[in-house]
Structures are given as structure tokens and as C-alpha cells.
Image (cartoon, rainbow, N blue to C red; front, side, top):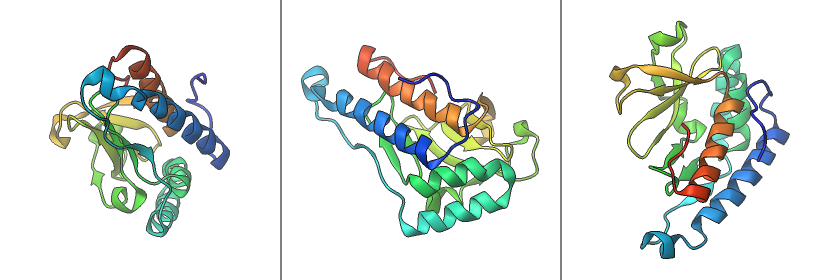
Length: 175
């Protein structure tokens, strides 16, 4: 497992390594899952982006400098389904996320944040115009948000660590 990546840029090489590590960790989670939990695992996969996702990714990257890492991410990765890790983690493909916005007054920006996903309990994850990642306090945008990562690389590292933690202990993740 890597060290924290809060200051690393999100590049194709970084994302390839992240995808490989998460895929291996998810494979470990589903191995023996039914024996451990009494039911079969759901979908736990990282999908490649579709053509519409790549177009949306380019649009996000051009929208504001803080979305550059988000654009790079969506140029390499489509939907992410980690339904059996804790409550589950689900990252939307770019073609979906580009239209899902929230004002996010806590971030202080004028550009609406992009809602990139949620957990299985409805907690939302958003990337603000400065590139920071925020998590909703409740399963609603109206409950407010807390900053959980300085950038997308740090957030992706938290997701990776969450998969490892769940595999090792059955405990929910860190995000």
C-alpha cells in the first residue's frame, strides 16, 4: 500500500497504479466473501471510461483549474463500484457527474462543486473548484459538507486504504 498522495498530481500513470492496487484489493475482499458474510458479493469493479465520459472529462478540466485532476481522473476511469466495502462506495462516471453539482458554500468558491459519488448510506462526495474533496454530513446536500481531502489523489488514497482496512478487519472505510 502506498503512502499518502495528497500532493501528487493525478496523472495517467498514477491512475493506472491506483486502479491496479484497488482492483487487487477488491479481489481479496470478494475471495471467500460468501463464506465470511453468508451471501455472495455484489459488483466490485473499476470500469473504463466510455466516449461520453472522456468528452465530459475534457469539459470539466477546461472549466476551472481546480478540476484539472478531476478531468485527468475521468479521462482514465469510468464508474467505480465497491458495493461490498463497508457500506459501499460508488463513484459516478464523468458523463453523470458533470451534471451533478452543488453550491457547496463551505468551500467558498463561486463555481459549483461536482458531486462525484456516494457511499451506500447516501453520503455524498464532491470536488470543489479548488480541487479539494468534501463529504456531506448527512445523506442530503442540505446537511452541509466537511472537507476530507486536499485533493483528488488524497481522496483516492483514502478509498484504497478503506478497501485494505475492510479486507483486513471487516471495519468500514476511512471516507
